[in-house]
Structure formats: structure tokens, C-alpha cells
Amino acid sequence: MAELEEEVERRQRLGQEAAARKALIASSYHPVRPHIYNTLQDEALAPEFLAAAEYSTSPGADLEGLLQRLETVSGEKRIYRLPVFTAPFCQALLEELEHFEHSDMPKGRPNTMNNYGVLLHELGLDEPLVTPLRERFLQPLMALLYPDCGGGWLDSHRAFVVKYAPGQDRELGCHYDNAELTLNVALGKAFTGGALYFGDLFQAPSALARPLEVEHVVGRGILHRGGQLHGARPLGTGERWNLVVWLRASAVRNRLCPMCCRKPELVDDDGFGDGFTREEPTTVDVCALT
Image 1 (cartoon, rainbow, N blue to C red):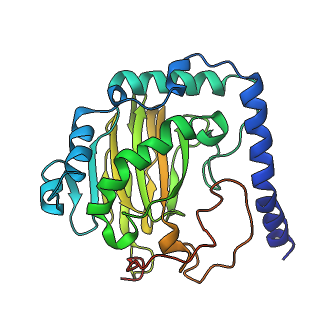
Image 2: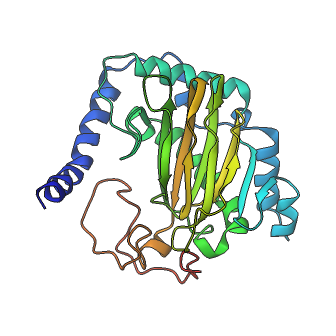
């Protein structure tokens, strides 16, 4: 019980501590690639990604047509992949992340499982990069791919970069995300190993009986449901950096917390918090229990 109480207190402090780090970074940190802090431009995005997003917003767009514009990794598990960023943008973002990593600025952990990486909100990249990525491009895609999981109602996110390297994190245990949907983009660098593996939805018996392995390809993003059990195999050589965006729909999670599968009891928080709102939820058929 003492450990649980300590963890609850730690989580209650997260919002204030993150806000303090963000303020210090904003006032004292000097970027090495300042252009990536400008509002996201189409030039940073892969042509295939732009084409898929444009199709998704066109009159008469449907799932069948969208699937012709991306790779279906597993139709059964509803896992998809497509290029997201151009190689020059991946390189520039990596250079900025490494510059920040080597600075003396305070750094928060990406999540409770990864020890190395960067919270994009604290670095100041949420508003110019991740929010337009979600609103302009990911929402129309996800609305066609995952209408039953809140894909058309995405209203917040949590975005972070994770780093795997010798002497640091090398693998990631099996888990599911605090998200309705997830985008995972390999940014680089050169590496071997570290493949993602996927089971079934976490509520399913024998969910990892026959895991599906998916190799990372730099610049390409993997789309999957947040409740899909997954993990990362051990890194072989090199360094692997990935951008992970947890996409959240309050219309879904206001009714059912994706972590405990209960109706949430809410407390006030700054920013997006954990993606819940006090508004009356829109009617969405929740996929997490199907």
C-alpha cells in the first residue's frame, strides 16, 4: 500500500512538474534546428502520406479506397503502415532531439516503461508539429480505418520520442497503450533488431499465443489500436529513435477508461491531461470490448 500511495502522489505531481520543465526549456534552451518549431508544412511529409490524407478527405472516400494507398500489415489485427515523414525531416528532428538530449535542460521520462527519450510537449513541439499532424492528417485517416474506436473524434494526444541504445533501454515488455489509437514512426538511426511484436487486444484470452513481428523502416509509421498488446524485441546494434503519438478520443474514454475498463472518475488537470473531458460524450460504438 505504501508503494501504491507513493505512485499516486508521483502521478499527481506530474502535471506541475512537466509545466515547470516546459517553462524553463522555453526560456533557456537554444535549438540547433529552429525550423522544425515552425508550423508543420507539407514538405516535411512523405508524398504517400499526403496522398492518403487527401484521399481520406475527398467526397466518397471509403475504407476500401484508403487501403489501396497504404500497406496492410495485418487485416485481422487492423495494423497498417505507410511513410509519414521525409528523410530530411527525420534527420533534422533527430539532430534536434540529440542536441536537447546533450543539453543540461531538465527532462521528463516519456512514459512509465521507457527511461530514455523526450516529451514533445515539454520541448515545445506539440503545438507546431503534433497537433496539426493529428488534426489535418491523422484524423481523416483514422476516421476511415477505425470509426468504431473514435478515429473520427480524436481531440487530444500524448506524443513522445523513445530511444533504444546499448547501455540504455534495449527492449520493451509487452503492454497496451493509454490511447484509443497509436502512431509509431521510426526516425532512425542505423540499427538492427528491435522489431515490434503484436498480439491480440488485451482483453482476449491467449492474446500473445501467435505474436506478429513487424520490422521498423525509417520514416514509416505503424498504425494500430491502443488496446493491441505489443512490445519491442531487443535491439541488436546501433540506436533506434521512434516518435510515438498516443491518439485519444474523449467520446470513447469518457465512457470507459482504456486502462482499467471502468467508467472514469475525473480530477482536474492542465492541458490535455489523460484525454478525458467533463463534456457529455458523443455516441461512439467502443471497439475495446469487441
